Length: 193
Image 1: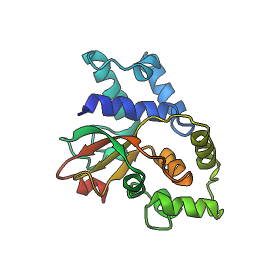
Image 2: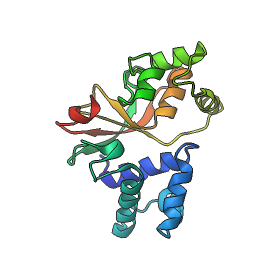
Image 3: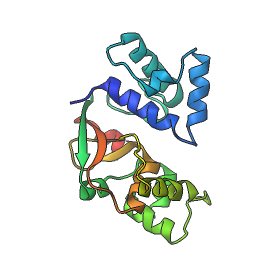
């Protein structure tokens, strides 16, 4: 079992280490007078820190405000930690954003995106080097934050956070026992379609 507070902390931790999202997150931390330790060493027993992290995710991604990434996201989600097999991880899909649809050739499957990256194809002419670098890091044994996947149950999972890491896993052939947080809700299909 997991919690909303753990998901929020995990989400922010993944974005903190992201070249794409990390700087914006650091700016919001500074504006709110918070240190990175709020994200790197979360204390889930501290209600004030949990509130600060939720506010940060709201400011940067629209969490709890029905906007941006979290538009139409269910309000009552059950969160669980899970280890996914290679086959289960390979079945996860990207969120339905144009970049991920294009990168995967329309399938939203990371395995299809990996094949296209290996073939030298780009989505919207965006370089593929970040995926290749992340795949190299995996091969060196580096550990990434858990992926955050969502669905109505444990099947038909869609990536909420960790698309680059999911793609890197596909490039290296999906290591066994991929650590994830999985959010499920009966009405998740509205968001995950």
